[in-house]
Length: 339
Image 1 (tube, rainbow, N blue to C red):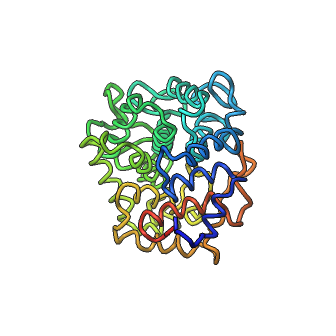
Image 2: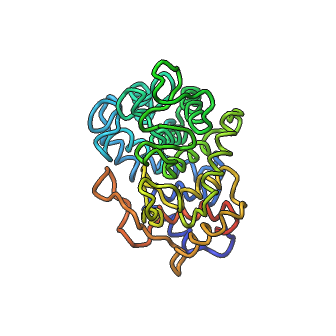
Image 3: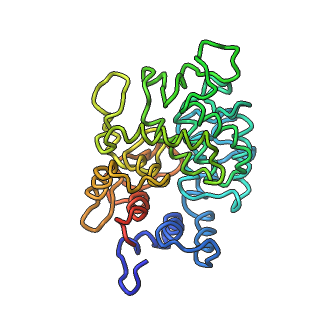
């Protein structure tokens, strides 16, 4: 934080009226240490008020939202989406036992013995965007990493192809399926082509995984995944798509929360966190982020789930603290968003 020269954008993010944003801004932008009294107080306030409290208030006492099961449906109110949302607003298992209960319930119902997270309860329901989103969410929520080792190993193998066989070999212990149909993010929904939305989620999950837990297999998967996302200019989002048409316009609409629809900012969030912030292939994407800021240095909410999940996060196409927080995290990490 700048001394003697208050930053109006930072002051906006630190407004006590928005305890969730305030907590994350103190943690991620100001960089207060974990034992700082102000940060501890802000973290507790964020769990008692605002989005975290509102989402947890909708949870069933048995640890699920909407209905029991794998948590994928109904969108975007069930367990999958509620846990992703909680992770993005800074919730932690150590601050509320309900979060731990929800994580435990999800792992029991939705992770197979081989480590796949699944929409259906069986391994055939696995898909990159779900696997990446849930791995990232559970790590950030503070779930015991030992429980996630099979999920990360499965995810890494599906990227590199090591130890995997074609989906038709139903006797193989590790094989691809109709959705997760091949290595390097191949996806049945994307006409069996590599899916950059799924790739972004997987790389985001790897960025959340502790460095000391990154096995040689995971490191190889990170390298291959990064090269896939960087092989095309992320600012153009010219990745393979199911009909070889123009890239989905959602790439350029920065939003909050971020579920399976992905934006260019999330590519940067993943790759910068993995140490690629100085890669020259990210220059155009970083410039794109900077140019999206308004004259006051704020970013607008361009993609919204308002009315579609438990909490609304602002008015569409208006300056938004959650999106601004996302952008400033990335820019500060690469030295272009001084706070």
